[in-house]
Length: 98
Image 1: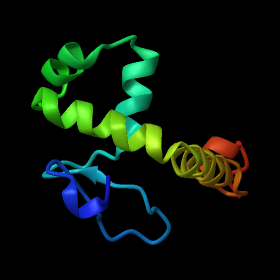
Image 2: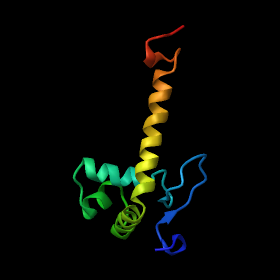
Image 3: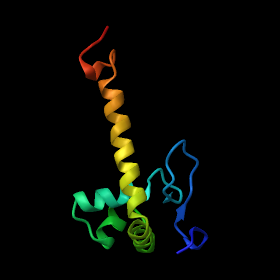
């Protein structure tokens, strides 16, 4: 489905992220899908938990299926950036507070 045909998904400006987000939310499709998978949510449950229309959740799942490689790559990049920040010398989480 071309991006312009999505009703509930939008592109947001971000330095490195290219995946779409849910309109009016600070929530990427990848974040929604990850929460659904880790909490074993179906569409109605996710719609209720995130206060979204069921159609928005279904649209996000469709987008995720069509763009799986992008979502996986961006999840990996996000983990890499978090780990890099945590392990940076001088950060409280590194244990090296010099």
